[in-house]
Image (cartoon, rainbow, N blue to C red; front, side, top):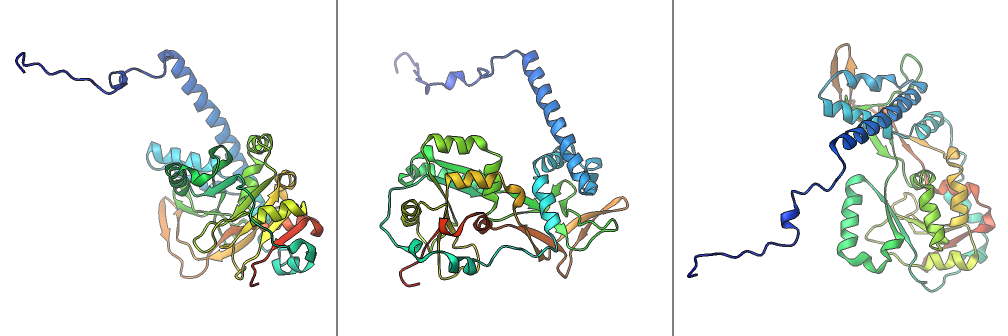
Length: 332
């Protein structure tokens, strides 16, 4: 106080904030950025070609309108759309599904594969959700020490989506992708079978699971009514099954979905993604379309579009019945 001086001890790292973390020269950074842009352009050209093959050139109109960031958004939409699944889904429109009803399948499963056992130790967890929910879920798990799960055995993946298409055909006889805006597709998740498609493009994840000794992967809908337990994992392991199903009283929707797949069977499924079956669910959805030189908002009053859905129960078609086990509730 007598010297009229103030001594400050700054937090560690405060004085290093202005130090550039990337120590490469400006020239090197520009060269890397140029290479990344060229790589993206090649991906964009390939993706546009695939969309042209299924007569969806109208989605390119947005490149002639809007700001640079909006045109970049459209380019990202085009690059990230799964054109292979889109082609399959378009081919499935109007084709009746050949998959048996779930209750018909359960009737063929041997009674010996329906025992109920005690819970086993926790199994690795693979969580799939929308972009926003996944980031929230990662933070939520981190804040709660992963709820006793091993963080090295928990994975977060963004759900597989496909664009909605018109239910009526255009002049060229094709169902057209609907646009949410000139630079954004109108998209919806494809359903529980999307996890198979996701894993088919991530061989390294399956290899990592194998290296960790993972033998089974659980696919379930997380909700408030049915708390997670490990009885199904124990049942599948004791029966040496490829597929395990937990049955709930309400099986009309996938809200109560709980399926366990063996790793060996899962590896087989990811090689058969081209056999996924899609159902075109008709609905009423607003969209925009280009009419001459203007973009027009369309607000239909009747069903006008197809949303593509595919169920994880598709995997039952690829499994032999004596390799399927079912866990029933005690009051079923």
